[in-house]
Length: 335
Image 1 (cartoon, rainbow, N blue to C red):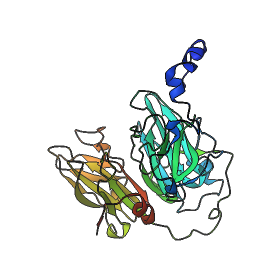
Image 2: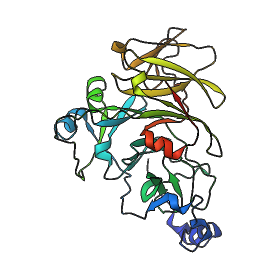
Image 3: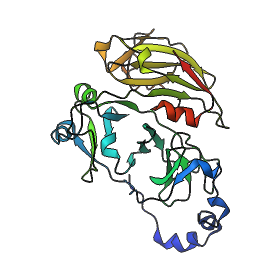
Image 4: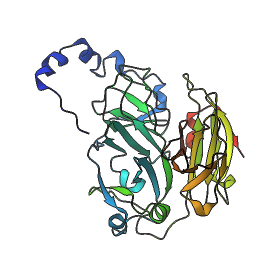
């Protein structure tokens, strides 16, 4: 998980043209924003980079009596282990970096737009970078940067708007957003991100407030950023787990959601398969296919001949409706 650099090469690297290219000073052409500066707010902040996250058990975090029952949580499934990131605990850093074998990722949460995304930290050049919240905002959304502040990516757009390589887009890894109570009930063995630098939380240790249900969006991978975003409202997924079909990036896909269990996800449909939803009581299994395989909320087959297989997903995440409207021109709302 850790990378050691050979110090004897540093002098050569620092004097190389590429190093000068990455010197992102205020006077360099690379420091110019590729979007109108009127859309940029804030400035370089002191958000620390989190590179060695500590995980605690459900019971250990629950004993802190810090999280409300409907506190929002992002979940990742890594080798059949569930890693959970309560947003009330990520706020101090806003970006959490971690690695598991060859998987290098960063979980980010922007409180302003109520959007959480997970990024692959391995760039197209095969360089593995550390990400942090830069302090800048693009239309009120967190701008993520590498730790050396060479390159800047608006979280929701995920494509570079400042730096030495404008065409670099961060690959996303789908997460499942749910609540603390759902995590405790259905994923009791989850590893929960925890840290000592807990900042103030206005809703913690308070009676549970009504849950703020935001919109789930499936984003087309248009190079010019003008592709259609398909939006789904929780109010259309009341009752049992429900499936909606769509075409995205030239492929057939499904959106699966359930307001009672507080989840959304999207999956491409493999050739030869068709899906039906499972009853709510089967959660975290949510789908069964025409071959009698069962699939869980992360798109992993948990029963049948395809057991262990993973469904691929388009880029999709949850954000406030105002954030969707301010970042994407072409929104298709599915009712």
